Image (tube, rainbow, N blue to C red):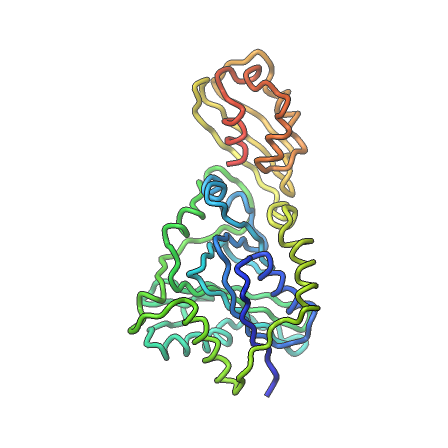
Length: 331
């Protein structure tokens, strides 16, 4: 029987947890089963446009973490009521078969052993009575595979909905769009109540017993040091989480005391490459001067605010505040 590392991460930081996952996939040859939780986080798929997936106002006001993962698929919201799992395995050269059921069957078995009528559905989901409890993604790296997924145990569904509620008319891009599904929490289907941590420990114990294993094998101090560097240099950076977004166009409009203001912009690698203002506002100066000033600016609230530090917005948009223009561009 192949040796498997069984790991329960105690960190709730998405940056640390995704860095750990990448380290184990790309810098070890270990077979791994890992359980982990992220707190208050939107995880963006590898090929997605971050700005088009998140409700920026909600993210800012609720201090939501934003992180991009290695795998494709759609954006998901994680809170402490959601449990994540990762399978990392060595595979035969050339055998890159996308088979989600192979990895999800032990999860289904564990849930059914608790009396939860979970089943595999569609391409990569687990459901209870047709409602989604788990979404999954997969990727290959050299002769290794990563399959990971979510398990909605006791998530706050209102937070999930609000964090990901975006007006699709604001963005025009070729990025992968998330598809929202009807969801339910596992905890609502348990014959006997348990906490998410009790569920985590039960699931780990169930999987380990299936493979006749009894010991967890967490990261060494040396491994943690490597993960820490990967987290700081990649997963915590704006360049990875926002700058990796595909090229996209933005078209947004807002009503102000000074009239309507519309912005149309092209964004490449997270930076403004073209920008125009339209509307029925009044102003002494040509707003194209302001648009030209912002070209090359990173598309985030702080960077736009810094670029406008010495600008008198009233010269361009009478009765419109600087905060409103920043909000129009970045919210």
